[in-house]
Amino acid sequence: MRVGIIGLDTSHVIAFTKIFNDPAEKEHVPGFRVVAAYKGGSPDVESSATRLEGFTAELRDKWKVEIVPDIPTLCSKVDVVLLESVDGRRHLEQVRPVFAAHKPVFIDKPLAASYDDAKEIAKLGREAGVPWFSSSSLRFWSETRRLKNPPDAGHIMGYNVYGPAPVEPHHPDLFWYGMHAVEALYTLLGPGCESVSMQVTPDEDIVVGKWKDGRLGVVRGFRNQLYEYGITLFSEKKVLRSEDVPETYGALLTEIANFFQTRVPPVSNAETLEIFAFMQAAQVSKSRGGAIVPMSEIMK
Image 1 (cartoon, one colour):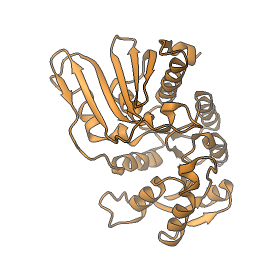
Image 2 (cartoon, one colour):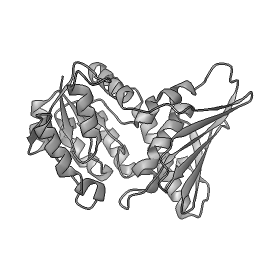
Image 3 (cartoon, helix red, strand yellow):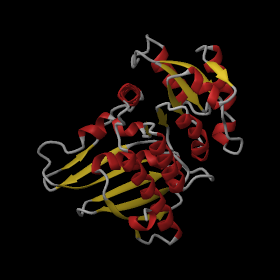
Image 4 (cartoon, rainbow, N blue to C red):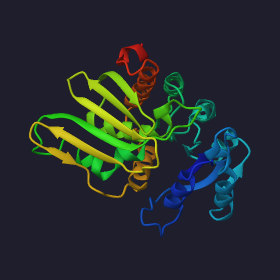
C-alpha cells in the first residue's frame, strides 16, 4: 500500500517511515511504503516551527519521499494516510480532504485541540463512510496489555498511570502530552467514566476519574523534566506494577497496518471521543479549583 503523510513537524514521520520503508529495520512492517508527504506546520508552535524543515529534508533526501503542495494532491498519489501534524488544531481542516477522497486515515495524537473538534472529526468520518482511528502508542505497550485484567488478580479496584505531561499554550493541558497516560488508563479501564477532578501544582497534575462501576482511575502527569511512564494496578488480592520494558513504535505501526488492511479500528471512535471528554472535563475542573465535573456536562 502507498502511504501518504500529512504534517512533517514531528519525529514520528521519520520513525514511521523507517519502519514501513526499511526492510532492515528490526520492527519493519512489510507491505507498506511512504511515497508522498505534505509539509503542513504551525509557525506559532515552537516544536513545529523549529523541526519542520529538518524532517522535511530528511524525508525528501534520505527516504526519497515526494513532497507535494497540498492534501488533495497527496490523496491522489496514495492509498492510505497518516495525519501526523503535531498541532491538534490543524487536524479538523486537514482531515476534510482526506475524508472527501475516501482514504482510510490514522490521526496521530492529539486527535484535536478541543472536544468539539474531536466530535466534528468523528461526525465527518461517519458521514463520509471513511474509517479512521487515533491512539497513543502507549495503548499497545506490552506492559499496558499485561496489566489489563491479569489472571489471579481478582476484582480490580482501579489503576494509577503516570507519565510526562508538559503543556503547550494552544492546547488544553492534557491534550498536548498527558493524553498518553490517559490513553493507557482507558485501555486498562475501558469507557464508562462518570466524573473527573483535577489538581494542579507547578510540578505535576493529578487527575482522578470515577467509573460507573465504582472503579477509580488516577493519572499523574509530570510537568517537569521527568520522562517516565508507569502503571500500578490495585485489586482485592494484590498490587501489580509495570516493569521497565521499552515502549517502541513497532506495536502501534502493526496496529495501523492491520487497520489499513481491514478498515477496522483497533479502538472505537466512541472510546476515543470519551478520552477527549475526560481530558476536557479535567480542564474544566482545573478552572473550578479542582471541583468534580460530571462527564455528562461535557458529553451533553
